[in-house]
Length: 165
Image (cartoon, rainbow, N blue to C red; front, side, top):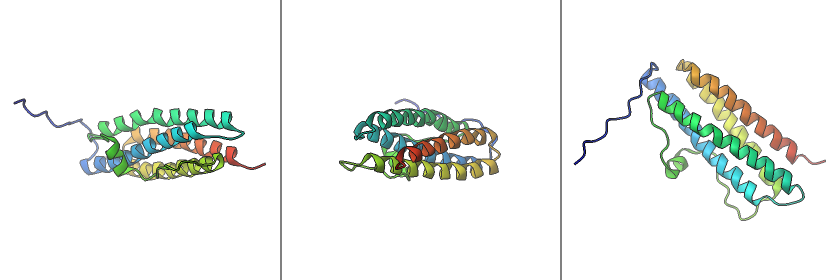
């Protein structure tokens, strides 16, 4: 029988309780990022109506941007000496952004729902900022600013695209 693998022990100078709080916060953001990515792709695939092309392309760009943050989020968790999400089930246990499995959603409702989800992500990012600043995790703090800006921009574009007239 093979010898069991050594536990994942990434060295960090962040106190273990603080690192655990950082990891929990980031894992929640990671779960919500995956949920938001998949919802954005779902709406990208199923959008219809007179603005199809514009919405289809915008949602694809946004989904790509969201997915692009996931690896950095997970790697920050690992750099703090913790483990990150491991499966779709693990994502489901941590996500707060709700799935949308409706057979039809109007384009306007898609944009509004995604705007609200991005704003919810912004709120989680701001809460994480407080946690990482308290833990003196400067590297994560700086990256959170960038992720917040990206989510705010997505919410802004979704707001403008969903306006009438």
